[in-house]
Image 1 (tube, rainbow, N blue to C red):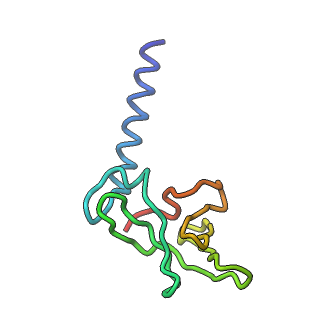
Image 2: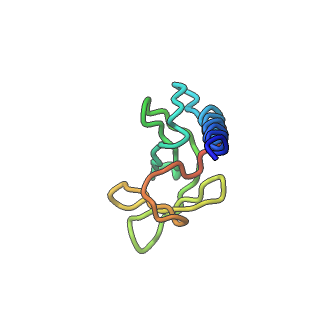
Length: 108
């Protein structure tokens, strides 16, 4: 039983390492970028970005659509997911309801 658990943990570790390397920040190489980055938006240009928490590098990952009834802006990420940037600048994903996260991340 211990052998099975050890093998499962090793495989899980390798999978997480592969994800971290594949989705690292292209500017600074931060491996944590795959698991913890910040969505941000530029309302003037209508673009949504994924921002590295370590170096602040922004990568265009989606487009904004303004809501006429409020100052919130909806975003459609290039990977097909969606969310909302609220008036105070916070982000909420439509799929999970979680704030922040790597919505629309992916290769550069």
